[in-house]
Length: 634
Image 1 (tube, rainbow, N blue to C red):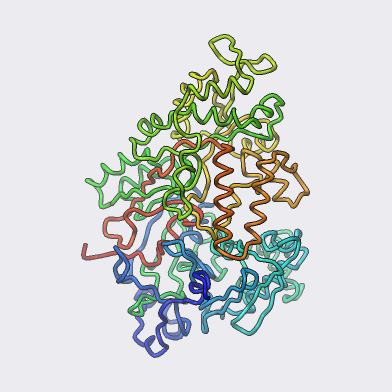
Image 2: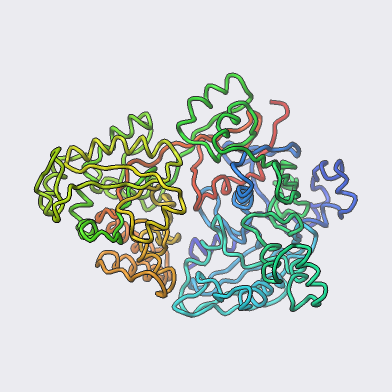
């Protein structure tokens, strides 16, 4: 019996036969800009079987027309990193229903979640016209991953399962295979993520920077020209994809950067070899150019409200909505509200690895964590900060996830100060001092310094309310603002007692997505940074978890990683969600909060009420910005 995942793996969409490509429609931008004179005709630039994107049958979508320039404001030059995220060209990727489907590959096969075979599209090319073939995968595997100078740590850790790397094979010019002895259900989600595991790079271009393929004198000249120390720094600089700063680096994305830094405007032009077309054979993207205009982060909302951006999703928050909505009457913009997918708009993170021995013991007492959660009046937060438009919830998944259950949202999230007081008394905090503040076992007043970055007003607004909520149960809080990197160092060093951040990144998971956020896996997890670092480093750094519940979460995550079916993975997800929410390792406030997304009034195919978040949505990525287009008749 074929599984749903296998069916989607084999499905590449309806393909246009080669004969139909003669009727394919090319953008006039290429001819008007003079680029077309150096290019073959469209029928020779597209893969033999391009990916066909069907728009006419999708709700709210229309077949579009070529043309136009899209302006996006960014808060700094580094923010050109948003382009590869929202372009969202992946070997396999998510659609709007968060189902996995082929994209750059024509099809793929998965056997027992151990063996992954990718079939490339015949005739597919990088943006410079060089062929996209198995050689681009071999180069990454042999000449990058296995090169101890380029990759000092060896093969990326996400590819190492039970201490063993995959077996990589080139089956033919258009077919590659990765296989493990045990299941690796993380593999597809890793390559479909906003910042994907890069299995392929443009080998024909990059070989000039590698000593295996370049003669020493020429390589020395390239190093001097790039003003770097050695060939390693040269290769890393010229191959950077997270921030596409090298205009010469070929890409498979819809748009390619043409502007080297530094610059106040980065111009991305359409990729003439892009692999997607609409059902009429018109090559995507519809929009010819994208401008990333650098501005001050603090001014982006104001500039967006005066029509200086055609599509804005970064550097906006719900607090900007009223101003932006009023601007609709004066400028040709449309403001929509999408739902943020984080498990909580703001969550409190007690540091279970803090150095203070008294607070360390208290945080490990589930009664204290539950009591502080019960003492938060989420209804008041919702009404005062979000006009009642959010959902009062623990830090957990949203109803849009097929894994959602109501009791996860409600776990220790009702406002019950009487029960909070009882739990705190029971936990040994039954004595009071001046101002009716509880006394710690060592005689100090129960004062919690909550450290924040101070980067947005919503955090401070919520904390002002929580200050009053917790004062009612005898806990006093103080807020300290720190620079982001300094704060992270203090968290890892155990210097902080509590911090705040948003909740779970992915509040809309499916069973096939990794539940790694629920277990110690990273030093970025502020509730258990040392346990996360220990797991992330493979045991070489940090400290192993020493709480039974955290150890159990890690064991369940290991079970998920070795599972062979979606049914198994779903059961494990629910075990982890039950434990995570019941233990209140983080204290959520509200979720499903609203995110303004502003577009030009005549920009089509932008969803009116999408889901907004980094992973797995890639912000706008799963909604395919290559299909957005300007309706000049509007």
